[in-house]
Image 1: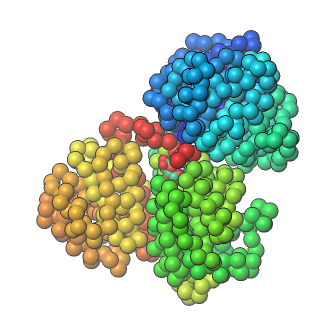
Image 2 (image 1 turned 45 degrees about the vertical axis):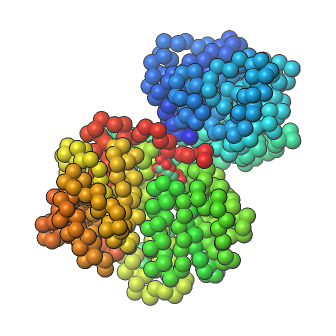
Image 3 (image 1 turned 135 degrees about the vertical axis):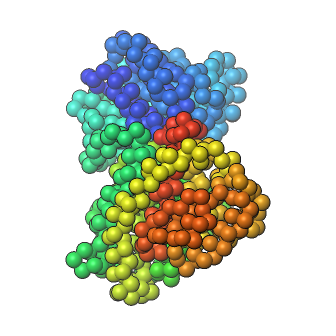
Length: 620
Ligand code: G6P
């Protein structure tokens, strides 16, 4: 939440920072701003609302400097107006901040007593005041930050500039991500490497409690005691193309369409095609970035007796689906929990537990904190991330990758289906390790997985159907999504998608629970979306549908193949290709994504940047 960027070099800083902010806008779009040292004086341009409003102002501004900072905001303290927009400037310094200062009230009272003139409602401006006071006493920016940081409670990444040091960019990390980019005679700091990848692929991932002091052609990183530390430079293998819309009207549409390729890419390292055998590729903290050899992996994964899956948002629903899959395939007890709950209760994590954390961004604050807690409690951890080198990826013991390329649409799509594919592969692997699957069953699951990309392709054909249907769907007063068994989590995911994109009331329910409350909501203005592929609970789900129909609910049914019964019950029937029970969620979520996309689009909402949301939730 919030994206920060800083640049020092011979390119036009306005352009570099604006370009970077465009790539960071997924982190928040309540306001944006930049500050540049222009002839030694700080010049700021800020604007409420999305980046486009800042651009209108920037187009009329000329800067002559070569060092600057920028920010795109997801509001925490204070409404999204211009005075709350970053960069904040006090005296000779200006800063951008991502995070939350928890003791801001205390700091504010202190500053007010001291006579400080506070011009915004943000916690960030208070930090600028504290730093400015140190500068006035004669400190350098780095010294000032070192003095101020111990006074701050909470999470923050900060980048700052001072008129006294026009050749220095200073940044600090304690929580939200921060990367230092190194070009030829230029340097960058940013919340995410995507923001600078057009300019350099050489980066250093900054860890918590580290301060960066960057000049044009040199840099130094310090720990909080002020000692210089040396860190590894990573060369990123990231293509700038992945962060373009490539002709699609929205990133979300592009990402929905990428799913056949992405699911194939996520699976491909893990299947020994020649022998039709699972060959799970898992990197461990001890394996120098290389996947563990199969015999090592086998001995390391064999002793787990219990699995916890912890995640947020869409990744949580992937985890819930994983519970059905891992328990059925590998006979291992699985518990799934929201990271925001897990981290604050006192979970009993028995010995021989594997804690799996799922996160597209690898930076979700609650998921990261849960990972750390699980490690403290002595559990082995496994991350499933999309962002390689993210905090979660770096800190987990075992690591698997979604390989979905950059996901920019705030509502997650391709990261979910890639994760579902990986959880299936993990299920098959643990099934083999635990001897709960026969060799024939392993082969049969792998065959269905291999066919999955082309089946997803077929389901994408519902795009045009929903483009039309959205014209009427948008007028329903609400939506209930139902599913049973392994398809129940996708009912919740479908509802989440509609809520986040179309701002409509939608609930996902286990079909069998309808009679215990939600059925009271049903009338002819309520749409009921049911995921009912032909599986062992299909008949039960159809009985629930009859009950909905009897009360006038308007049904959109998703089933397998040609199905007269569902067709006769539903207003709209969507047919999925026949697949193995465990892969129905992957196929059924595609129409749910398309439906939310088109309803939101028909209502005129910004599908890539829904209101109040951010893609990477780096504060609690
Ligand atoms: C935010 C995003 C969701 C995402 C969730 C978890 O809420 O808007 O799309 O599913 O965070 O993110 P993660 O990066 O941890 O998967």
